[in-house]
Amino acid sequence: MYDNLNELIDINLRLLKEKEENSEFFLDFLNLEGEQFCQLGKFKEAERLAENMQFKGLIEINDELAILTELGYKISKNGGWKKHIQNQFDKDLNNKRIKGHKEKLELDNLKLQKENLEHQKSVRDRDGQIRNLTIDNLRLGNWDIRFRWYLAVITYAPHQLHIGS
Image 1 (cartoon, rainbow, N blue to C red):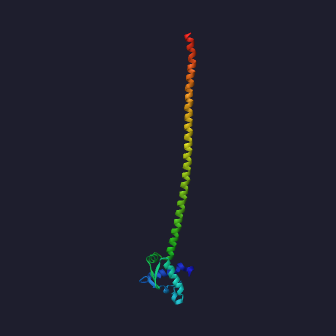
Image 2: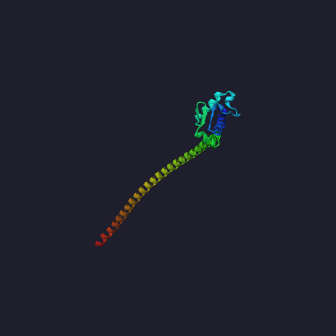
Image 3: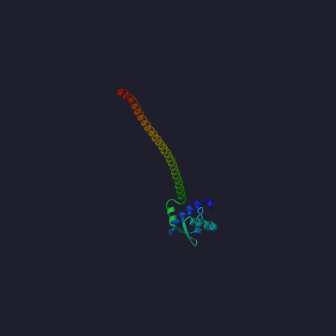
């Protein structure tokens, strides 16, 4: 029974949907060949199938009466249990793809953030080097000015000495 559980659920959801009150005794559930479990004397299999369907939220069991739930009716109306399982599988697969794509984008974003931080660090380092070079350039400029003044004073002073003598 468990090998074909999805097919059995599909068959019996259809059976319940077609009933006027959307209910049926679970002993009258059908097997894969379309025979009722009670006619074959397979009461335990019918009960296990009903319990599985109840666990999945497809039916409610009242004594031996299986009543189609809203979820069970909706699934049956939209193509049956196997289609529902396939849709769930497709959704899960799509969600995994989206999650994988999202994780890849997040990883790429982290890499770009790391590169940005490294770039900012190199810019700060270069700014520091520029600042130091600017300071050195100003010092050299000041020394140059002083040196020119010293040269001017030294070269002017001897002329002053000769003129006045």
